[in-house]
Length: 74
Image (cartoon, rainbow, N blue to C red; front, side, top):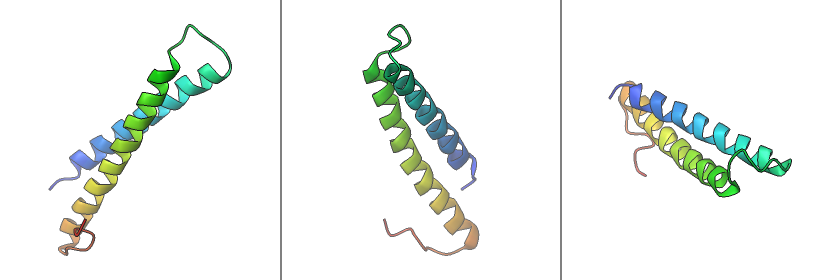
């Protein structure tokens, strides 16, 4: 396995969390024309799920790079 999928998942997770938090912050200060609150919450949840997937991919990549099965019992 290459580290490409883990890097891509990490990048997507950071982007989704960043966009979700930005929408929530804009909604918190009262600007109504930016994006709906539910969209911010949805992007934040997708970002968290993607971050969990990224951690699992990094663990898999590192275990294969070391040649052991540590952390693969999940």
